[in-house]
Length: 335
Ligand code: LMR
Image (cartoon, rainbow, N blue to C red):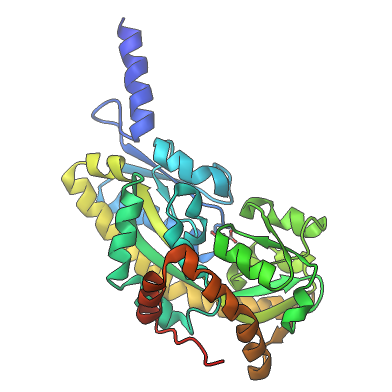
């Protein structure tokens, strides 16, 4: 009987991340898919350090980088089940949760720069979206801005027509799918942890990402061309299991909230510099030729992709899209 009680306590504690016995630390598993030296990897390690320090060791954070615990498609489910307590996925991966609204941020060229992306994430529009996540048991603690997406491929992508027939990796979601199709490409959802190999073996011809991921995952090793297109944006939601977070002792939660704030500030300061450095390192590697879109090329890309905005009105509703335009400072170009 006693061993059964101990076993049940241990299973429950694993599920909730809570200690079975009073003197054991609360274990928080933080899973992510990027390299430890990417901005998210560094912010995760800083969060661990601060969380353990501010709780005087009552909390122990275990960080699992590089999809070593869960891949893209598994980690959200694991969070909902309570098998992991912290994640920081790209918000483009939320549609399998049944919160399709987050896909709206993949509308091409929605954010003119990082300032506008941050303004969007701090706007009141996010309150409604956060509630939708909470209704799925997922509590957003912060949003982290990782900058603009650029394309890489095994052939130069200069004008929209260059995408014709290319197999392009997407993270997921209806908007990314529509963007690839509008360009005449063939979209394929591939987990981030499987992307290097997919590029290397030609399962896909190209992908889009932030330079710090292209550098730290060594995609430049297997991609001859990169276009600084800034057509999309990578935002992370630093999320936890709502039941778990609310079950924490109040003083532990206060200490963790402090660690969340500081790790978030670190992330948002580090990301832009890491991306700029990564572009230079990729250039210096001599393996990937980097093209910066001219104004005329950029105009051609925008003109080509604006129909995706029109098409997506049916999915999101015109009012919602207009609220997003207002909050992000986006003005549709006059055709
Ligand atoms: C991707 O899947 O391309 C990235 O969003 C991975 C990440 O978390 O940066």
